[in-house]
Image: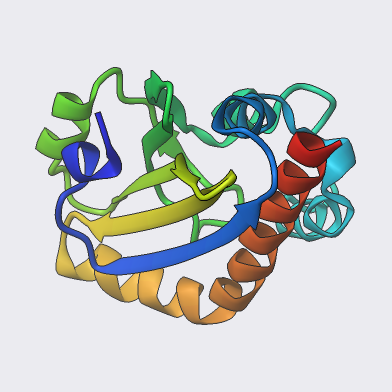
Length: 175
């Protein structure tokens, strides 16, 4: 299962990739094991967003994402897809857990955004390419406007976070 299966249509998308000089297996393991200690800048940004509450810890980041409402929807040899239904523009956030890609695609209650994020590993030359893609789809026009305002503010920081995650994955895989 890929991000296309989880959230085939979206309103916002962010994608980043890096070349890793390691086997796809090592890179996939790094995707599953990198954690908050590998992400000093992201940790600061998340604490600001969470009003000082700690959001990342020593658990693998993929597991820690459950704290903000993202559930692992697919986990295979070439990557992981997490997803959830969120309202990040609210000061304390808010989420609805989904149990499957089908539930995610079907969710249509007004006032929310459906979010899917994928980490993929593809063999390339003597190493691999690790990519991350995030897709966001609003459930109605009001949520689209709210999230649009929110994204104008946090979107650039989200890109910094994604690049830091990829750098951490590359360091772990190449170590």
